[in-house]
Image (cartoon, rainbow, N blue to C red; front, top):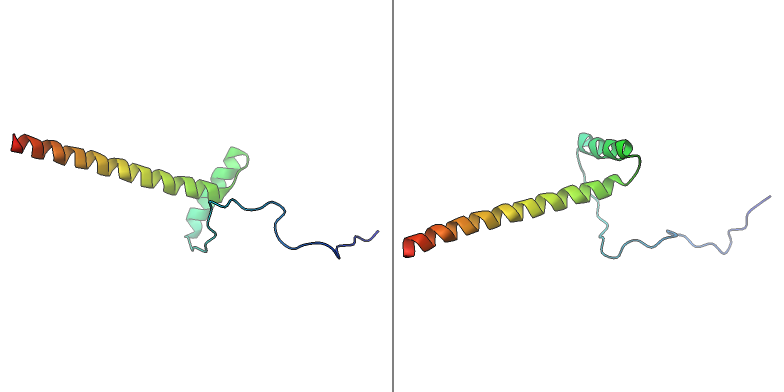
Length: 82
């Protein structure tokens, strides 16, 4: 039995998420291994999504720290002004 792929099209069957950007990045092997192990321990998933989530969490935490610092500075300056 032979399959006829003469009318087949190359490329993914499912379109990629338009909100995602494809990039090439070099990460240390131990970092990749860590996230792949997390996926294995969870019973499945995508290690790239875990990396994305970790980066997002870092950015959000950093922004929260910045907000706290700014609020503290503003409170101190308001006390000095009054």
